[in-house]
Image 1 (tube, rainbow, N blue to C red):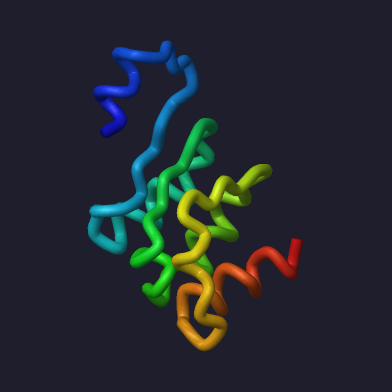
Image 2: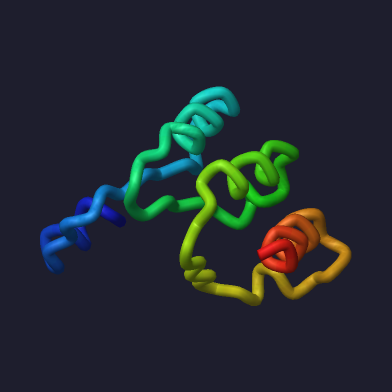
Length: 88
């Protein structure tokens, strides 16, 4: 839980949660140019707008917690993620 961890560790960068938002809200946040940490879930990588989100956010660093969620190479989420990384 992000609110809880902020009480334990001082986090001074903005946290932008992309997951759990309607498609247009996700796209708006991604193209906003806001700096900070963007949080996407693995199920979100299965949606068609993920390509756009990743390109618009243009992350300088990706931390993939629980990377085993991308183990199945035939899964849409894995293909989208790997295609994005390969373009970088």
